[in-house]
Length: 412
Image (cartoon, rainbow, N blue to C red; front, side):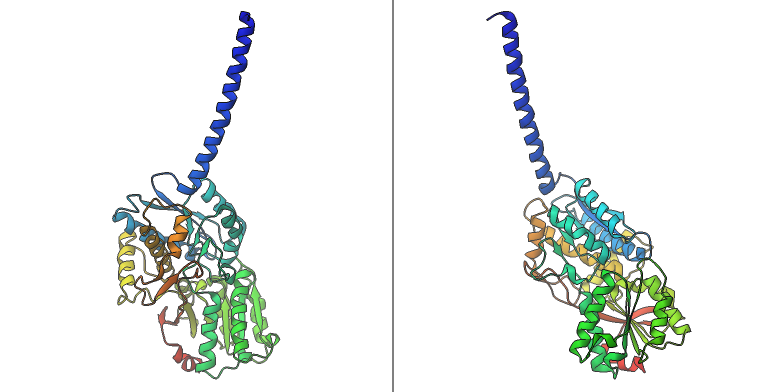
């Protein structure tokens, strides 16, 4: 073989080796990417949150983030998880579904978070569920009580802490029917015109039908558009309602809800207002103090001032250490509880946390107690830890605990 032929042969052989190495490198890179998605890189354990940090639901987003961060900081002071610190990456979605979806993909694909925790809102949650299922990553303790996140059997990657909106509105209806003389037809609804408002309304109507409501058409249902304060037409609906509503169940954000209640009182509407937890009781109290009375908000966490509960003592201490200027609230307590449950699951692991084993760890908690005064429960068939609803009443500028049996007296 001549020199030129030898060189040509060697060149072809070198090219073959190069292409083989290139293919093997691509395969190895692919394997590393799969491993990165599951095992996650060593260092901080990253958690993601897409939430409302601006807009009418921003108080809820900030409170949720505060509570989660306070609990993570507490755990980091103890050494973290297997020596690894926990870190929350939060991105603002303004309570808009399209932004929430973009944030979610970024957190999963770019930041490579272990799980998502504490996202705020029903429409935003619905927009990310397809992404969660596609990426097979945990969507934990979203700040929503919508039924779409509570399927039976449950979605593998959706695990809730809080009671549902159906349970909140059902608690309201049950109390009204048992402890007052209100008839089903004397109850009206004011709801946000989207999946959040619909979830609360459907839950309320379902409960009313169980208590003798003959037809849904006899119930006045007034709605407003998300991220607006346009509630004037809703006031007109209530004024035109027959019979005049004695109770208005509200499923909205705090700003439009507060405006509705102020205008209602100015228009001579004397109804009792009952709000689900998403309204944000601290913000609502601030808006209504000294202006509107007879306002109830159902809560999905205990009173953050009840220091008889071990969890509240821990929460208060952690909150003070993380942000001395902060004030305890129902919202930040929910964030703290959510992180407490996640940390409990992480500490049960015997190996590095992954996107797969954290789901199994939560399902493996079974019946457990974190000091709220109520047993919690999670397993592979039960993806909602709590079913408890606590009623609160606006009094002297803040929402305080009361007994449902008192609702008849409040209505008089």
